[in-house]
Image 1 (cartoon, rainbow, N blue to C red):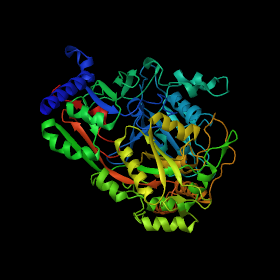
Image 2: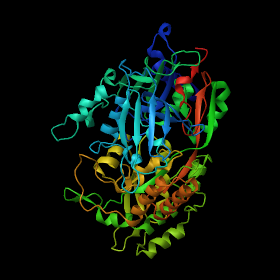
Image 3: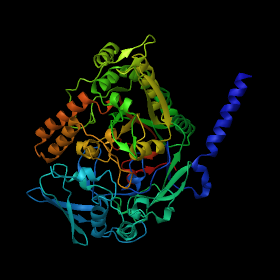
Length: 581
């Protein structure tokens, strides 16, 4: 009877997965080459300038003047076919490719580049994570961008800036569609652009320059992309790219769901979580897929306390009692010592990871090897707490110097099984040193809103993407940066905050990021970034957890994969082909 029920369950599951497979939305005679993937949450915006989350659609829909090859790390031409850097390193002149077009057939020219930088990224009235990475020197001045001709643009900076070329790879957006929304204001005096191209925008209104455009979006179901007929790239034989006509992103409730769909054949690729690695590895040949291992992944995973001491509309952002704990560096260090990262690696990551200690990705040439980290040590954690006046009651519950029970909430995004498991273990680990943690996974978009808008949170567990150039993350470390999330300033247009304070170590890290960007000598830059890593290790604005391996499974019928931990399996999606279709 048990076997019969199991068989019936398996059949019903297979029918369900088959029925929701995007391959079944198209009649067999009209099928086109496509890739089907999964994401864990709906997009928050279709506006590339306003986006603050990852994953997002913009790697498929937009390109910039240049791009970074994730295999070699070198800067390569994109919308610009060439560029010249002045001898004093203060000017770059970009030459656009002739004949570029937007997805609606409208010409893409230097006017779009001027608009994208001067009216969007450099516009202080528009919140953008990109702007901080463009700031130069002690003055934090922004580049001057001017048009030299229909296909020529000049960028000028006030002083040498080591990441100058790399900062010019931001997505270019269409002036002819968006300029009016920047110039006009809503009733609150904010640019209409701030509400432009939300997820309720009809797909045909979203004009792009990348290999794909949005064909349709169904909330909590899927996003479908189709090939952009005006994309500029051609193959070596002159064939229009991309080869693959459609990309489908299934929106699933959890990594468990995406795993089941991949095994059933409904998905063409999946990021391989450690708990699934062994099973999928055994199924590689039969399932006709390959697991790519790129080594340590770029990016970071961490917990962070809300250090903001500010008051909004008469109410403190953080309970003042808890704020005193969070802003005590010895408290943060005790929490770091109280988390058993090796147990995380063994149990949650199945050995496919290593302790993470730095804000800079281990693959980056600026990663500092001399960090010691915080090895699990309950006694050390308790000693630090006792030295700061904390005590334990008869139930081994930690009390602060005023006798308050030490208890805080920890949030993360629901559906990410790794993060949910990490949160549960942190809850268990900290209970051993007397700290009560209320762990609550919440919807991803709700999490983003709390971190960037309401600032209503105590402790969070999330991650940030990484790269080779540390300055790309400068907006995390500048005290007024758009991603300085552990002590966030209010976003433009939001309710002001009174009483926000910036610690001396925060100012020092921000200054070091300025100094490093101004330094053209690579060895000296490495020394400066090493100091930033030493400071973040000591003061722990982020308590780093585990650096897992970069693993993805991809169907063998998708040809041309050049896997990179920086770009994943589909960074060259326009070059890929599907065989045996």
